[in-house]
Length: 314
Image (cartoon, rainbow, N blue to C red; front, side, top):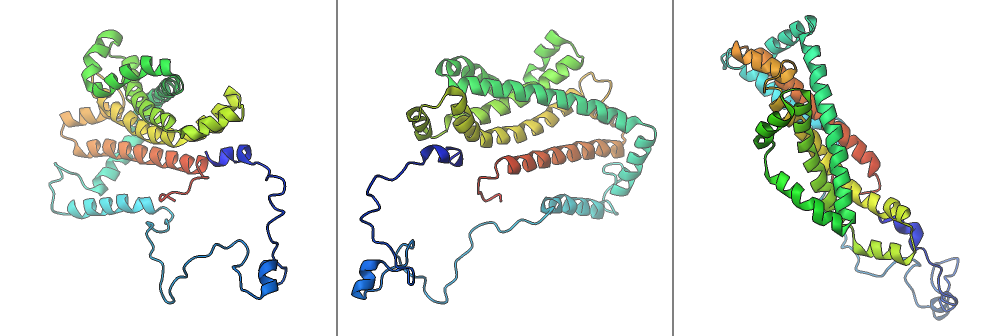
């Protein structure tokens, strides 16, 4: 956000401000006065200070340089532990091994059961995420840029934040029934709260000096939103989006096990009735892959959009 205001802060130096400054000589970089007296001056542009003792190295405090696909190390280690544990230490009826799960997934793909349920689950999660992001960001903008909007919007959303989505299921079923509308609404409510909390916090934490600078420069409302509000709210927006994506998958798991007739959750619930642990694990792996992939996608977009920031995350 500071870079976005750089072009607005540039001011010409006062007349004569450079007239009294001694110019460096071309050969040595010392000032003319120092060159005339023979005194050694500091090089131009370098601030005087204490020198680092010889042989002393700087301690590295950052986490270190990132490794491509390094985030896959943790899941790979988890799969290795699972494979080793299932080799002879666990009852297959309690926890099926990776080989059995892969074979079961192949059978589910062959008969079309897995991809059909996956598409329905993705549709529910996608619609809930879309509606939740739009509603949460709109509420955050209204509350963050207007004192009246804050008084009207922030209170109800803070109350909803304190109420678990599961506690609202009986009322939502009474209002909307048990169809797709109820399922998408439950997912959207969870996403909207996460989007609102983080985007609103990011908007209200914008440095007031940037706002005062925009007022002094006479920026229009649209240019103020584009130069100050948008860059200042992006970090909170992406944090809320990451939490919202996770919330969408959590809400999907809940609603697909309540009077559902399709979806990954429904497939897992049916497998529970017949003690098919391999089918249950296939559903869990599908949820895990979708959650990990969607979070990685949001991270990539965040790094691209916030490339002007330099943080420990790299």
